[in-house]
Length: 424
Ligand code: GLN
Image 1 (cartoon, rainbow, N blue to C red):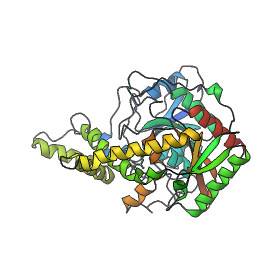
Image 2 (image 1 turned 60 degrees about the horizontal axis):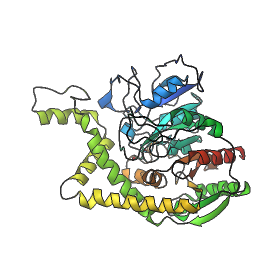
Image 3 (image 1 turned 60 degrees about the vertical axis):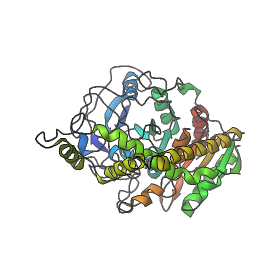
């Protein structure tokens, strides 16, 4: 175990290819398939699983010359906001080892913030790249839906998630994004929009930034809000124009997200049945008992909770009341964001409503943990890109400024992020 429990295994794979990442070690979140390297999603049910192929993003890393530094810790199957739901114990925040890293890509953020690697691949379903980036004081980008192939990403809630980069600065984030972005015929939701790293330049002057009042509403720590306001003032000094806006449907975001993601999870995790994946069931037992035994032993409490919730919400008689209603709410939220982003180039607010909690502080109350996702999940519902940038500290701990951009607008978003970073 490394100092931060960032890694689940450190099997290094060198690449013989020459490219933009030659000589750079990149860690890979453990829900991203790596050929011949154990991939567990931080779950007991996948202990010992060795994928026979690489995820598309990993193929691209290797083609760009990167060395794979190992697989990083996470919340089991990506379900959580602190990395405490890992079957292998929480990662520790390099800024304060008594605190969580955030999640679910907590190992990725700890590896970067702790100086173990300069770049890491994470995945973001409802904030899992931006949350740990904010808590650990680094940069994390959630790409537009479809801009990065999900082939080989072990699905949790596939209508929301994207693989994306975490790094110590905007330039490295953009460099890693340029390697993984683009079309892949193996993922029918991927789009043909590569990102050209040479377009990265500091640019914020004259841009209009919407400040949604909901991002400074109830539940947002006053010191975090004040620190983010200072960051926004810095953007104004750099020549951006800001205006107060409202996203009225945001109040439905958490419910719409948690209904949808649990429904998708209950269906996606069906394959871990001991036959297709997972430890071999006891063949002398009736099938239902054998199946139940494998899943009971293999899944942690949070995963079981979500499978139960999702299966309930999808069941006959409840489907219309929960799942269909959540899809309507998602449309309203997406419309709010699209509308706001016609006048505004970007939206800005805090990434997280708090700073990194102490290890164990939220584990007894899952609902409290879900509530901390309030500022990240709307972005996944809207499908748009968003980046978390270090923005000073509150209570002695890192604060993240979240900049959200137009659909497929990563170029402009990264340029604005670079301008902000250079002014720090
Ligand atoms: N915290 C959110 C959840 O538990 C988001 C996780 C993620 O983005 N993978 O679903």
